[in-house]
Amino acid sequence: MITALKRLLGITSVDLAKLIQEGAIIIDVRSKGEFASGHAKGSVNIPLEQIEANASKLKKHSHIITCCRSGNRSGMAKRTLEAKGLSNVTNGGTWQNVNQYL
Image (cartoon, rainbow, N blue to C red; front, side):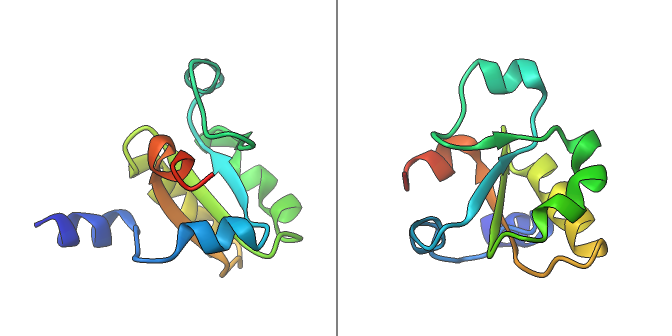
C-alpha cells in the first residue's frame, strides 16, 4: 500500500543524502506562509503555482529535490518540471523527510 502511494506521488527510492551531498537544490513548493513556519535547512521556496514559470532557471542544477507538507504537491512539481524537459528531479516527499539528510 505504501509503495503504491509513493509510486503514485512520484516518490522513488533514491539516496537523498547522496544527492544533497553532490549539490542538489532543494525546492519547497509550499506557500510562503507554510515555508516561513518551518522548512528544510538551505531549501528554496518556490510555491507550486510558480514552478512552471521558474523551470528554466532550475535547468542549471545537477539535481532538484522537491518537497512539501505531504509529498503530494512536490509530486505535482516533479511532474511539471519533467514536462518542461527536466529529467533530474526527485520528489523528496515531506520537508521533514528531506531535512533529516541535512
